[in-house]
Image 1: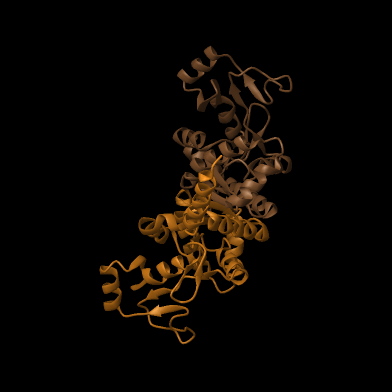
Image 2: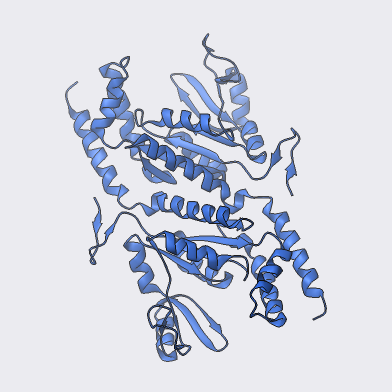
Length: 225
Length: 225
């Protein structure tokens, strides 16, 4: 009853596109890292980008580094699920690896902003489960941003400004969690992912299980009374 | 930030209409009982019925016993969320208690069939979370039905016949669980309920929490640089 995949992977279910968004400083990065470390069935989405590779980066791990011509081709062919331009460079999520992962029952974690989330909705709504992480208070958000010693006042201010427009979109998310206590918030995040994996439309193998039940039932009911 | 209710109950969230359906013998009754015993926030929906009260039944606990004229009035006024006729008697879910429970953040368990579920969808789709419980096999379903000593062959046969048409509607449910191992299945059921309680649209208090965040953020951003 399990669909055998080309790569030898056995798909029990369809994967989840698990989107986590939050203002900078609300704890998204820590939560994502905890989830990726603890759960072998979910991996971080690898974006394509047109910006040059930094010496510390590995092609195919941190990003797929592509040129602008390739980016435009992919965009025109509908091969990009979402894209954005940041400081003159393009960043995007390629469709191929996502479709493959979903079919093989692997989940993909997206650490993207509101605009990226809305773009994913347009193309893959039923596959996306979106979670918005809120800080418990603005005072706490400021404290967390200031604790990152490298950020100067100007950077913190810009982050807070961005936070304002991001938070205004809380209503576009399936779930909204307040990260007051990290362990509790992480527990809720895991629980959401585990439950969404159980959704009927992510259980394609049910179709054949039901067929067997109905066939056996018709055999039993055909027996003389 | 909590909405104070008339009855003094404090609503942190909107309740869930938790629907569990299954063919007779798949384990729905045991699962429902476990859930009701373990979780004080969910209660079984009390139906209205036009059939006479049995000596062992208490009005308002097992059913609200009403006459046919009252039933028809309620139906005509749109006060029934779903209804059915069984052996000449009417059974229905009255709207009032459900709306009150939802507003007070209490969940209601519905132990109803496919037709009832489809009727609830028509009126309350965003409040309903539906779970269909499957037996692991038809052989096991027959065994479980036969273990109930009081059921004769004819009754079992009728139940299996009904099971056939019920199972054909598995596709109408949000979640489908196979009850192979009771503890595991119960764990999944609890997890679904807990996660659905977290859904953004069931967290009306978020609106005011967000307002506070945005107000505090605008104060911070208004400070001179």
